[in-house]
Structures are given as C-alpha cells and as structure tokens.
Length: 250
Image 1 (cartoon, rainbow, N blue to C red):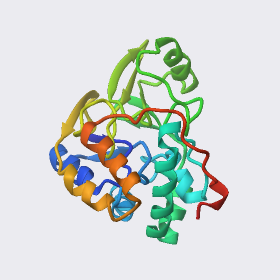
Image 2 (cartoon, helix red, strand yellow; image 1 turned 90 degrees about the vertical axis):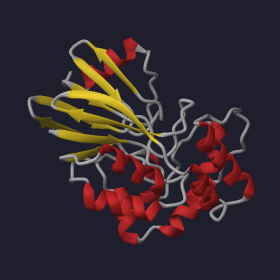
Image 3 (cartoon, rainbow, N blue to C red; image 1 turned 90 degrees about the horizontal axis):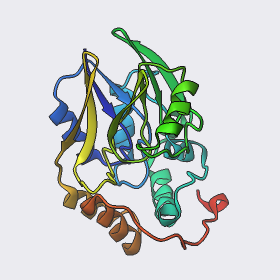
C-alpha cells in the first residue's frame, strides 16, 4: 500500500497540486490538518479534502478549528496579525458547508494500515490542536507516544518542519508543510508511506503566483510578509505584535 501524508496546506492550492503530481498514484491520503488560513485558496483545498480524503483519515488543525468555529488559532506572536487578517479573508471565502466540515473534523484518529497501528493528530497527543514539540525533544516524545498508546507510528503536523524520529518502538513522523514550510526550504513538503516505510519528499511549485494571489487578499503589509515566508521557507521573528480582538473577527 502507498499512502500520501500531508499537513498544513494553509490554502495553498498550487503547492498542493504540485505535491499530488509528484506523489503520483496513491492508495489513500492521511491529512494532518490546517487545510486553511494564511493562503489565498481556501475553497479548492477544502473541496479537495472533502472529495479525496476518507472520513477518519483527516484530523482538525488549529486553523481549521478557528475558521470552523470563529475562534482564536493561538498562533505564535509574529503570526497573530497575519492570521487574523487572513482569517477575515478566509471567512468570507468559505461556504457554510465548508465551515461545518472544518468545525466537525476529529482532533485525533487511530488506524491499522497493513500490520501497523498509526495514530494521527495535528499537534501532539497531549494537546492535539496547539501543542508544540521540537523533533529533538526525545523525553517529551516518549511521553507523547505513551499517551497515544505506543503505536507503531505517531503522525503529526503543526510545526511546518519535516522529520522522522524513532522513539522506542514508535516512529514519529511529521511530513512538514505543504503550503508554508518553515525549515528554510521553500518547496512544498510531504511524506509517503510505502509498505510500512516512511520517506520525506519535496515538490517545487510557482511561489510567485501564490504571492500575486495573496496581494488581492489582504493589506500590502500582510501580503508581503506572507509572501516573504513562502519565498524563503522562513519564520517571521519578533514577539511584540499587538493583541488581536478575536471577538470582532467575523
């Protein structure tokens, strides 16, 4: 069996299309959440998830929860203004059915694939929407794997940084971000499962086209900042962004 693993699409339809083309024919898709926000193409990404990902093989990300329920995605400080601006844009783009789909996604799922048990969540088992654990924090991953029941695989997203790490008898996999990588490599990131072996991959896409689309979605300041992140595969710095009045975000 061959499975495609994707996370953190963030409404970047050209990046997702590039990943689908590069991955080729697969038997199924595991989606680790954050289908929307930050990017200019929320509806095509949601529609793809509804059509192509089996129920139970997709979990909710913090931005999916935020758009589905009008909540704070609890982003890190440098991203709060960007997330709020794009949440306003995305809210206007999504249909009521799309919002309901995002609001009702499960926070975690466990499946048997071939002879392996796989646990899926967006962040970490102890805090499935918002928890943040670095790849090299072995002690924390031991605890997280135990909370998931020490399956053969724990598959997560959220950090936008791809890795594969062995923790006892559990392989922890983060496929990285399709739509907004943050590891210094601007190419879309994904993983493949092939008969129990996980591998990480990248796909090139037209980032400049996405940057042009972003210019029509938000202010120049917001669109330029998000474009810079896409073009560099980088992370915004700073922790002095003003508080966002989430109660007034539509």
